[in-house]
Length: 193
Image (cartoon, helix red, strand yellow):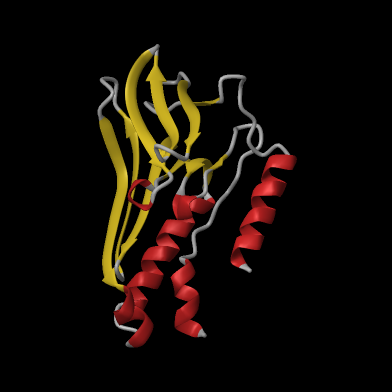
């Protein structure tokens, strides 16, 4: 049943133009990520190569100089969420990586901008390491997990999805049609059933 809903979501996503690309499968975003008063260019190249597992490559340019790049791959080890976070102090990249493997979780996020030399300037970072069975069976660490996820989802609520490959599904948005994406781990539903 879950695959049906994923299929419907992807179909609706494609039909209603939430992700427009150029002829070269590039999406261009503009944001002042180094806070110098000029927009930088965020270029996303949609790869979607199931053979190699590549989903998308994101690059940030300031004055035609590459200052940052990241990939979002489709296989589990390469899942990545890249968002444009904005608050009263400016625009930032939000990198969100919830990783699970054999019942162990390692969730991380980083929110950063860039200085005039292209170095990352961190606004906030967070990490949570946990065992799924502790949360599901004994509710140990559940309170910390919930607080952490509330913080992440608060940041995501003020962010526009650039590209995300969690669960092996490629999602991407545009500035013209921004997508706000909240994260709820699928395995968490088993805790309360």
